[in-house]
Amino acid sequence: MIDLGTVYLAVTGALLLVTLGVGVRVLSEIVREGRDRQRRRRAGELEKYTEDEEYDRVPGDPVEDNGDDGGADTTCPQCETDNDAAFDYCRRCASPLRPGS
Ligand SMILES: [Zn+2]
Image (cartoon, rainbow, N blue to C red):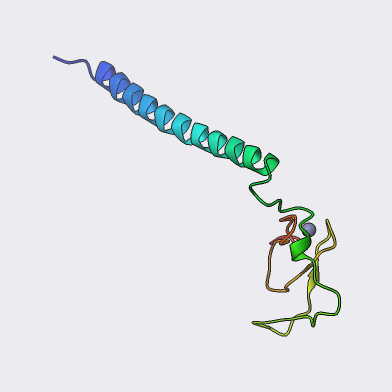
């Protein structure tokens, strides 16, 4: 007769191994992608999301509020960039614009 404890241990061990394997693979994928992005950003292939002048409004341009919900722009508490009131996070530095959201 097969010992139930042994079966339990085997099944649990197998599940643990599978979980670990998947977890490690996902983690290494994330790390690999992060390194790749870092490398490309350093090489200038990827635009920086900080200090990007394209996102600054051209002086004299009319301020466009399309898809307006009537709200005023929200100023980022971190970098003081104007963001659409509909945004939850700063388009420049990705800081949360509202506390508790
Ligand atoms: Zn910001």
